[in-house]
Amino acid sequence: MARPYRKAKNSRDASKSKSNGVVVDGYSEQWLRQGFSWVYPKEVVSKPKHARPGARVDLESKSGQSLGSGIWDAGWISVRRFRADAGPIDAPLLGTLLERAKGLRDIVVDPGTSAYRLANGENDGLPGIRVDVYGHFCVVSLDAPSLHGLLDPICDWLDGAIQPRGIFLAWRPDPRDDVKSWPAEAGLVRGRAPTGDVRVTERGVACLVRPGAGKDIGLYADMRDNRTWLEPYWGGRRVLNLFAHTGMFSVVAAHNGASETVSVDLSEHYLDRAEANFTTNELDPADHSFIAGDVRQVLDRFRRTGERFDVVLLDPPSFSHGPAGAWSAKNDYARMVTSCLRVLEPGGWFVAALNLGEVSPRDFHNAIRTGARKAGKSLQLLFDGGQAADHCAAIDHPEGRYLKFGVWRAV
Image (tube, rainbow, N blue to C red; front, side, top):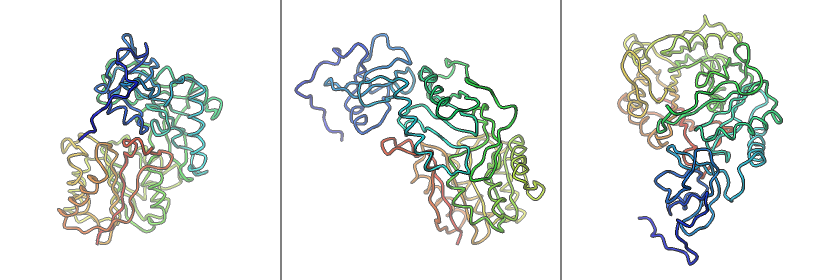
């Protein structure tokens, strides 16, 4: 039961707030005081009469106390708070936040890594804004058009501090927003575009990426620390990589001595890129296998033909649709775990990931347990991972811990 709100002695009516003030309810006030940076529409008590998305607004409690300042929006988030006081949201503030974020990356990003997240949105005090570095190019991702007014000062800072050859803009729309009204502008906004794929490295292993391709860039850098943990354990093993994407796990496994990798993905386009990643690392794709098909059908075929693997890696998208029908990570994950364990050698390792914020770590581990029980397998947890350190998660932003990852041994 929530604590009943009691007005302070200096309480005043919400209608007497500043002309650009947004008054929030007690529940939102509590979260803002704890460092949370979002205000939802249902938490807004009153707002400026002519508030437009992108306008800077002051946040106030119902008693008139300042709760900081942020950017107004008309979407599923009403205000993204950038500071806890009533100061400006301008180039100096953005520069300070970006410089602080860069300082962390200078510490946690390996010198042999040229693809990493420079600023991770709310977790770096920049709600709705992410900045990724891919070699000599940067991508600024915005969660909403209301943040577009901050793009130029961000690019100015990047030009000075990072000096990229080109800066791309990407949108990260949430399904709860009306994306039909969003601007079409995206792509290159500063400098020049690369003439082809960009070669980046992760701990010295190369990957070909496309910085201007939106979701099709070709590398999930948030998996870096998990791949790092696995490096010593690939030697001599036969690896099945499901939902392989552009094959980075397969490449790292082969680079570290795996006897064979089998990469499965519904998209032949991604598997072509996976083969190119093998070639660019001077690994012969002919020594490995690439299967275009529905993962569920491929696993069933392997089970029936007696194919077994030393390591099975499961890293599915949140949702997909293949020949076997629709797939939902939230609803179908346990069944997929069962299928994976049925093609795993005794004593083999099961590597599983889930990038879905609405599924808690507890529910993720419950799905693993349910799947193992149906497969008649007993598992030992060897490693409990998450996103790489450059994809840091602020303790006052629970949504920041979105990636679940684990390694289990079948016993």
